[in-house]
Image 1 (tube, rainbow, N blue to C red):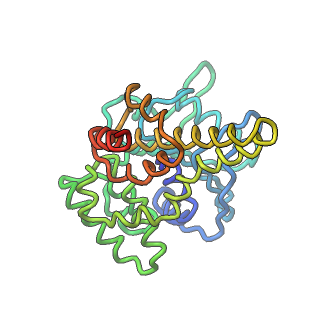
Image 2 (tube, helix red, strand yellow; image 1 turned 90 degrees about the vertical axis):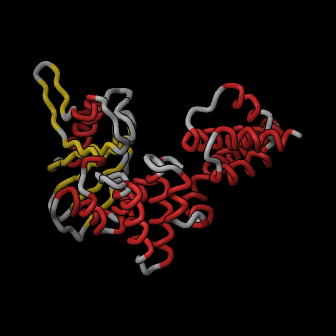
Length: 296
């Protein structure tokens, strides 16, 4: 699962928590705006409209500061499009998730001749976790906050998750917590405090896992009319392959070309199986061992 999807889910499900944390205000009449902005379509990570305050809270989550086009220009572009469409006050906040020494995470404005545009920057690893621990929707972000004892913080978050009474909510927050914690914690440590079963059972994870399959099925139907069922099946396999490579990259880092060549040879059924078992991989050696088993 991408971190973008995790955070979009949290913002859409718990907008009051983010508004309280970022704007220090209470709002009950909230509308989640579509993230595609008019003109040439671009997508913002999260656009939340506070109807009662006639204000838009625009959130951008970044794991790393690298961006094309550069983030300051993107933020100006988003602001102009939002202001043109809604003509109201817009509060923009960029939340950097992963610790880095890059100077880019301190840049909070776009500057060009006759134009200056400012926005807020939050480096989550510098934030006090206490305010994040108070709300279910912010608990996953708390794992990335400032601490002298990361293991203790992860355990504290896990305890707060376990205290959520509604089972479906608890499972969803647990999954989001595990996914975001993976940015800074080793999988073995995460498994000590949070149920791994939640990941496999989660509708959030399953939705992302199905993304590639659905794309492949749809293309298979369309191409099956014109070119036959076999091409449709191959489209599904290629779509699943792309999804698996994306998940592996999130899990293990960049996948070298030799391993990608071996993955290219897998059948659709094998790729679906890999999509399940890769959750337990902790290193590239685990992937190689699995491939050796399949190929023998």
